[in-house]
Length: 145
Image (cartoon, rainbow, N blue to C red; front, side, top):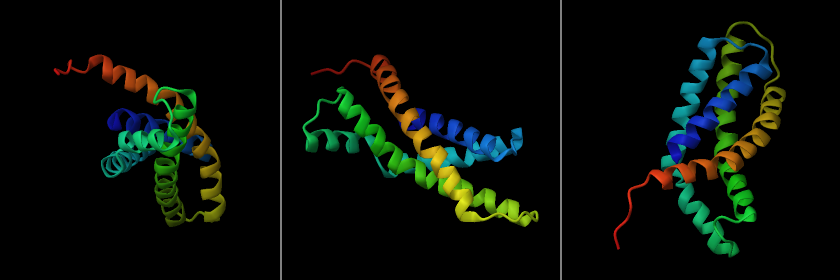
């Protein structure tokens, strides 16, 4: 799940970031995607979302497949992953732009990126987590009792 969600979030957040900046090139997309993917995979190892989701469901007494559970799990995933990934990617882009002579106000650049990436990350998490979970459990080997 970590690999699937990390790849999906990294792909779409990198794409949206570069498209919103107006400076999309294939090499910059490849670099942003690779760095973002590494960040999300490391976060996935450090923060096991399965355990986080189970803890949220237990604490709020939710059924794991209920709409409320899915909404809250997507929010938790978005809060954990998206701000850090966005902060790192924007900081890298800012440093690169400034190095090449651009005069950019960093807080505005970061704010715009967060306004785009947080809702996008939430929607992506909400849509893709159940799809990937179904895919993983469908292809999982049967467990013996």
